[in-house]
Image (cartoon, rainbow, N blue to C red; front, side, top):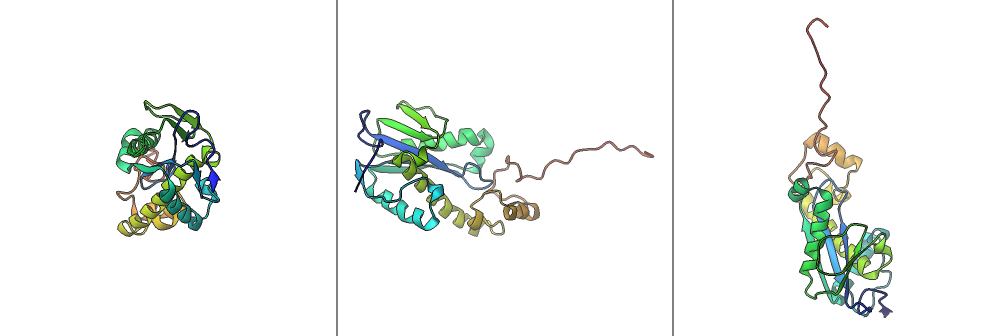
Length: 207
C-alpha cells in the first residue's frame, strides 16, 4: 500500500487532482479527468500518463476507478472548441469534471498554469501530473478514455487513421485531411484542418 502525498486528507482537507488530454489534437474532444484518491492506495508506477505504455495506462485506469474516493470526466467537443477557442474549452472541460465528482473536495490541484472559476480553493501546478498522484491519476483516466473514444470515432470517420494517431497532427493525418477534407470530428479552426487560404495575386490582362 502507498500513502498519498498531498492529495487527500491534507491539512486543507480532501484534494482533487485535475488534468486534460487532447488539447493539441486536430480531431476529437478535449477530455478532462478529476480524481480524489484515498489516504492509502495500491497504484504502483502511478505517474504522468505520457510516460506510461498504453497497456500500463489501461491497467492503472481500472485500478484508479476501483480505488478512488471519487472520479469523473468532463468534455469539450469540436463545435465548442471552434466557438470559444481551445484554452477556454479545456478549462470548461476541467470545470465539468470537477462538478461531476460525487464527493466535494476541499481543495483542487490542476496541472498547468491556467485556472478556471470555482468557489473551491485551487492551485495550478506546472508539471503536476508527474508530482501529485491525484493529478497523475486524472491524467491517466482522461488519456485512456480519450484514446478509446478515438478508436470508436475511427470507425465512424474512416480514412483518417484516428485510431492510430488519436487525432494528433501527424503526417498521416495531415495527408488524409488533404485527400478527404475534414470530418465532423475535426476542429475546423485548427491550422492544418482547413485548407490554407491561398494568397491572392493581382492579374491584369496583357501583363
